[in-house]
Picture 1 (cartoon, rainbow, N blue to C red):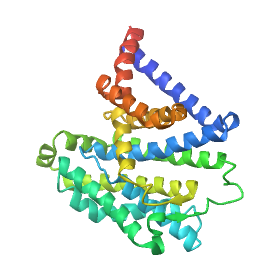
Picture 2 (cartoon, rainbow, N blue to C red):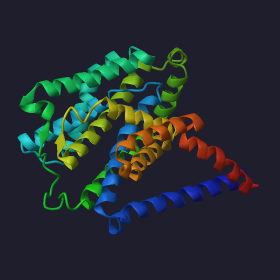
Picture 3 (tube, rainbow, N blue to C red):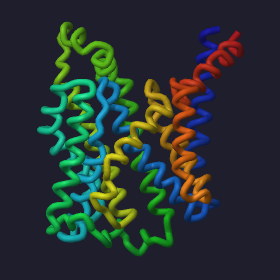
Picture 4 (tube, rainbow, N blue to C red):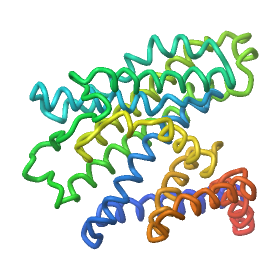
Length: 323
């Protein structure tokens, strides 16, 4: 019975993965520019949510992800626009710049826990915004940087042709999800969960808690920086007003609504909470009110998240099929 159940689960998983890949590959054929723009926005949100989720597996939740995203975006924008670099090497460089800044910041942040960690990382986000806003040269001040060049070839990546942007966004998102998933399923992932459950107990059996927390913080900053690089060259504009505290808060909301205990949680949360506001865009001023009501109701009635709710209802069905 157990073997039959695992076989059914494996077949369903393979079918769902294949169907998703086919759907993502063929979407630009039948979708218009607006639909592709929504999917691109979803991809950016997924990368940000996943980068925060991997840090949450250690029991930490950073409100400084928007700051690392801003560092990646600013690094790429300055290199491409001011120094004439190509876009493609700036993708990893933007992530590396965010990760390098994270090293000293992370060493300070991981020394505190709970609400103090929230406050320190939130303060870091404000500091990044303040620094970029204060120096008009070269960061553009509060007005930011305009007319950031698109990726190469620029004749292909144009505002009227969103398909290349779409495939790039999907590719970066799949890469991010694959790396984080491998980490969560590896020995390191198990160690991170043990740290989340009890860091003092993990340290008592020889786990270097501070080192693992720092490494996870750096990984989270790296992928946030990559999301910033893509954002800068897709929207061709960045400023401190864009990478605000709300951006980090939204990533946390995606995780909570989707399901913080599951890898798929931040992905589902980002998809649902990006699409829902688009349905209510015609309501104008009431759009965010409706969004807030949906958020509150979901936290009250499905505290385990959407993925947790689905898992609780589908697993019994699989068990019945396996009998």
